[in-house]
Image (cartoon, rainbow, N blue to C red):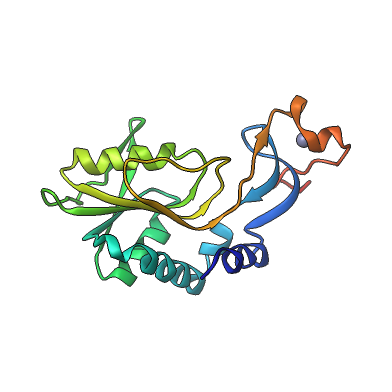
Length: 190
Ligand code: ZN
């Protein structure tokens, strides 16, 4: 599944909107990405998971680790396609932690899987969770890389699609400057 096919699927499911948006953070952007719109369809989640698994299989992971909640569905599907376990980390007392009941064997080969990466912060945090739990992270992957520049991690990283969606303070937003009306996705005005 190439980048164009993935982005077309997102557009079709209204998981990728293009225009002029005010995000929940208050920042403005020319694109709005909502993976849940796509991943709510199990057949799309399975197809994306299989494609990502194919791309990352060479790393030989023994388990997939995802951050909850966004990464859980795609992590599960990648693990299914690889024939390995799927575990996830959740935020407890503000700290990302391996969910109770999940364990990593010492040195177990971990693939970190997310839905979207923007700055890579969440992926880095998930890599730390794996390492703290005794695993060896062999790579990281996401359905969509929406970052402005290349992602830099200590492990190999790949995404199915890349679509830089820069965000702006409203005062510095080129779309506002061009007089384009702004929509708030998720609210009635969108
Ligand atoms: Zn704007």
